[in-house]
Length: 125
Image 1 (tube, rainbow, N blue to C red):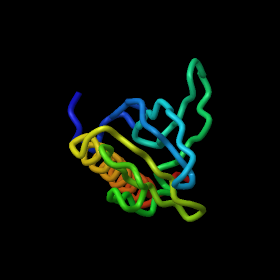
Image 2 (image 1 turned 45 degrees about the vertical axis):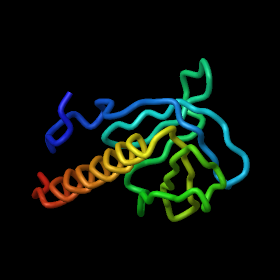
Image 3 (image 1 turned 180 degrees about the vertical axis):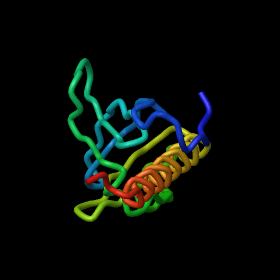
């Protein structure tokens, strides 16, 4: 499926893979991370409900981290910053790191465009 269509269904899955996740830089767990046009949902094994859902509207920044930031050589890391906390993710390659950073940033930007268009529409009285 294509990635750049601003009119794409917001619920369509844009990216999905197993990533290591942490809310601090020392305790990691493997979760299935699903990105759609509205949120990042994190699932544990055999769970149908996410253990955590990060609305894209709350994402302030998505940034790469280097080895020194997370103390994990041979992995690539990135953080998703929200007003409440930083969320850390480990992937097995720099290529996958960049894919996730780009996908999250693009999905967030497209969601903001959709929200702005909705707010700009005159309301029916």
